[in-house]
Amino acid sequence: MSSNKPFFDDVTTLYGRVRAACHEDWQEYCHHPFVQGIADGSLPQASFRHYLQQDYLFLIHFARAYSLAVYKSDNLEDMRSASESVSGILGEMTLHLAYCQEWGLTEKDVVSLPEARANMAYTRYVLERGMAGDILDLYTALSPCAVGYAEIGYRLKNDPDTLKEGNPYWAWIETYGGEEYLEGARKQVERLDHLAKSRYNAARMDSLCQTFREATRLEIGFWQMGMDCSF
Image (tube, rainbow, N blue to C red):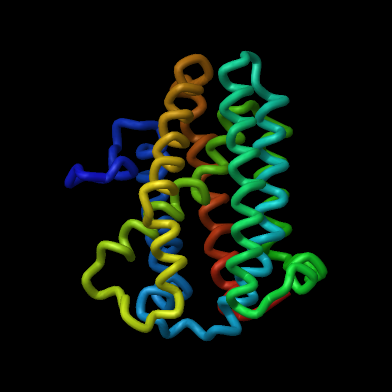
């Protein structure tokens, strides 16, 4: 990330183009009060705990979505890439449980929690796009999360106004703004371009933008679910 222009701002990529097509929704997602509360440490801790628990359930379905990408692949390279993502998410889930324990949440607390409607709406939408469309549709639906978290983490970590000392959410910011997560997000952007080489044409742009926009709006709903501690 030594460049002055982060990879997610590159409008020559397919990711950059669909992101630019829903600018207002994207700004609402990246600057949601939940995110700003993480930045300045003001987010109620009950909201963050609720989010953490729901995010674990979310990851289960994202692992399913990347597993679907293995099925949707028509060559070994794409299968291997999707399989690596599944393995990465399953590993992230173990780390997520450890992080939950730091917040006083046991594994039983997390896995026994009912799935919130906002969580179901988002994850099932992603799976539906993968089932109804092809692997490019699926990866487009996955990208607001896979790349958006990196953009948010990078911005918060490098923003001088972000509270660092005494911020209970600094570890979250470091995780999603860290090099390891950023590298995974970069690969997601590159994977979209790779898939587009054989599957994209101009007639698909409106549909891909709509998929990206709907997934972004569902991300906004996920933040709001955390804020409201809603089910």
